[in-house]
Image (cartoon, rainbow, N blue to C red; front, side):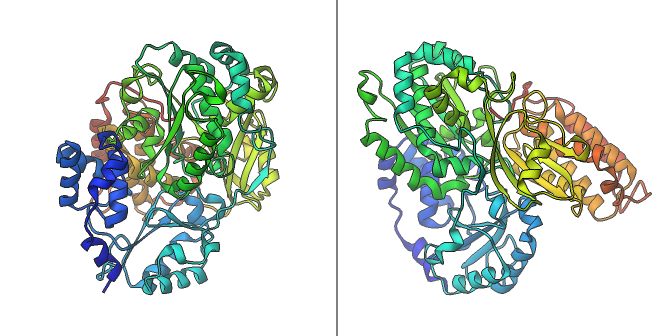
Length: 603
């Protein structure tokens, strides 16, 4: 019998103590559910009812939130919940075979709980460990990196022995920064407090003016001018202003923020504090992706040290009236929460469904108040700009893309890891530095970015040429680019929030088409259907997830069409699969925008 599971379910639920920690605030619903699940193993209907009653919420609301996030379980799962990272780079390193091996050794089927309740094994989206995969998560917080068949065999034995994952060999959970090339952001860091002192010497508007002078653009992908965003937020009327850090680094292939959170947290928090001084905020929030739960204690320790140093709290650095502090909200597994309005919904204890815009967060954000949302790398850049000046930053990079950019390099290369380059760097230079050989393609910016073929390796990283949120996945000529696109299609279908029909149905139809091609039942008509789905989804979805879902599909069909054609057959109707009916269904599903709005998915 699984004694650990029995003990969990039999133990009384200290809901009152947990609620007291969160001031019985409905806003903390996601955090409360996460902690309740950690103590109980899963979220049963009676437990959800208890939470709803205690927070004066309806059961439907609480159930809806619990069902939305993939790290919440409303059905029993194993005491050891094993989630293999399923990004394409993990697959390239053999993750599928390792998952099958673990299932066989533990005598459990994928996506099912073993009869004794001890273990369940499944996959999850990218865990942000592409440079040291294959990787997996145990119970959503214990990381295992660099999986091998030998390590999997040892894991199976430890699970059978019911040894807590925290007591497994520590080297299994080792996560290295793997900084391969550093420039201004990853080099020598300002002394804690230096950026704040420089900002205080400028006064808020002068700091904003210098930020505009730097031409810093958000490092989340869309590249909105940071100084302009902060100015709009400062000018907006509200009872309070908020600073939010988007640390929900969910784009497959991206892990740069993981490194900044691990080794450069002071620089991040300093940048948030400078933002607070600039816009007049008293409170900041970090939205930490659920896969980075293991970093929570470290980040809280850095925050506490900064409070003790007078860099957070009341009268920061002795400046009367400059009061600011930061709290951390841990996500529960939802890629769509990388979109700033969906992130704010999650911060407010709701499902992470993107809002209709306008109004934008700078006017109507967290709790309906003016809010600036920037990602980890952007705030780190702000600290350096405060210390060295906007003109210094503007001299780095290109006229339209100033400063440097961090790249998370993984895939078919000898030296995966983090590389920092000035904007304007050739794609080919990055391939040379990371030790890539016989490369046929690079996916820049993750699945929602752009796929480049060999003829494009002289293009340059920058908003005016090849924009990126940070991922740089390398594929040599041994890889089937159809399989790459198919993996990304499954990712988007899995991560769709389901709010709007074009995305919910369209991503599933794309998956069905690609799976049919994979089985060898395709025809040239299937590729045309995929083109049609791309056109129909691109301008009809509620947010950027659905609009970007076909980006890798479009690029790979255009640049690697033979990879698709090798899966084709001449039949137009195969095994009862009617192409015209599928296309008609796609048109009906995506012919209108349910919300009347199109949202960007990134900062």
